[in-house]
Amino acid sequence: METRRDIFQAIADPTRRAIITLIALQAMTPNAIAEHFDASRQSVSKHLRILTECELISQKQQGREIYYQLEIEKMKEIEKWLEQFRKIWEARFNQLDDVLSKIKNKK
Amino acid sequence: METRRDIFQAIADPTRRAIITLIALQAMTPNAIAEHFDASRQSVSKHLRILTECELISQKQQGREIYYQLEIEKMKEIEKWLEQFRKIWEARFNQLDDVLSKIKNKK
DNA sequence: TATATTTGCAACCATATGATTGCACAATGG
DNA sequence: CCATTGTGCAATCATATGGTTGCAAATATA
Image (cartoon, rainbow over the protein chains, first blue to last red):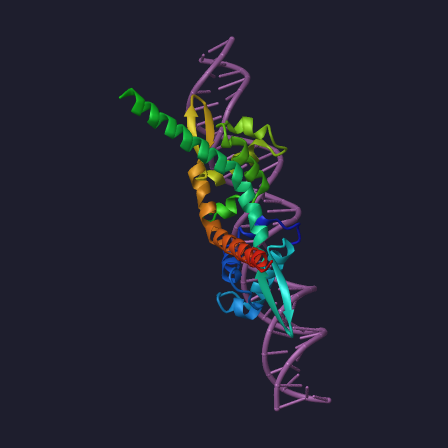
């Protein structure tokens, strides 16, 4: 709770992943978000703080209400980490393709 | 340590992410893996257990050595979760595209 | 067979985590 | 001005986490 925030650590918690999905399309207030979960309002507030700390979400003050919205660009960092594995998938797929065409040529 | 394993929880730890990257291209023994980190062999062994529990990696016994390899298919589950956000990215990109072409048409 | 190597597991420990409760404070509305 | 509403923060607590050390089991080697 006190350590440096990290996206991967942030999305490790299922409630936080659910929050991310919930506000992905529409910004919401903490109270509105909390209504979707069993957890208390304060507990959700803590999750929002963690998500804010690693800049996965941001706030928009509107009178006394605060709307939290997803910073979808930040999600791309996960995508970026996955890229190295995508390359491997594709390489394997191409290898399979080679094998298949060799079988075909043998016929 | 005792609870049900989850991929997102597994990749939350930086050492585990490093292990995944390390063995992505080539299966390795626990000792060989541990040499790449400051942590003790036993600590790495624990990480390997966690990764195994959520089926992100698998083992291949070879004499008295055990080779751990990445189950790259499992990584696609993260990809799958990201898909919902990719849709939003693309929608935004298209919106931007619309705006740009409208500006162009005005000229 | 005796010894060395490779590995996993159990016990233990300090710290992180996620939840709850209670409070404070600012903005709104009567 | 006073009550209500929306929100964050501090304190506390049980449990999870990640690390260490010490040991045991299995395989390889002399």
